[in-house]
Image (cartoon, rainbow, N blue to C red):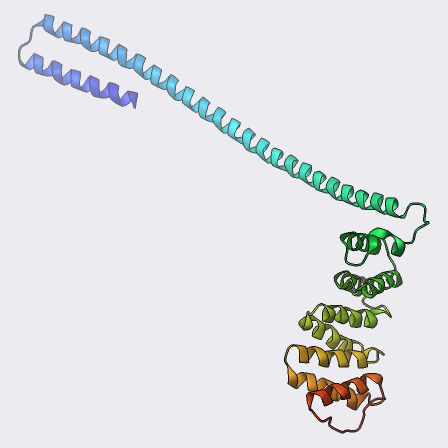
Length: 276
């Protein structure tokens, strides 16, 4: 850019000189103009060097800025990673602290072994302590029978949400257990007792479909019929009770189904029993 400026100035100078000569200018005037042109050229040379220096400086600053930006970006990623690692360690520490607190509470409650959990005054039915301690006890039980027994104990105390949690835990952890059919049935009973008839229907139906040879099938059919009636589904309710009477005519549940149908004013249909 500065070289182009020099060329322009020189061209204008030559044109000016030519015009002066054409106009018969004096030699003194020509020398004066040449002197002025020389000073202008010197200034342009100086200016061009300054421009080159400035351009070099800008390029150097640009390179430095890019280097700093890269370093900052790298540092930022590193900081994010460090923060994430710290957060993960804090979460792990919080989890371990919670587990330790539960373990310490268990030791405090059962220290000495002289008082059975069921005899502890804070274990009254429906209390917050009952729920927390029973849940903790189940979390420390690794065998299916222990989970089932604890859930059954909660059911006897009419602590239905906690009992349902225990039976669900057994079904989740030990789906092939010999206790699975019983656990599924009692899970339905927990829902039924709480008025959650939709989930009760699902649980009783699964007893029938998943464990067709289970001794709990007649009871599940009976409570399934009851649950349908509770949700005002008379058609399915009556149908399930009639199926129970047909498939298990000599069972105690069949007698209860017959009585319920009589109360409903629905005469049981006769049929050849499929199972006894």
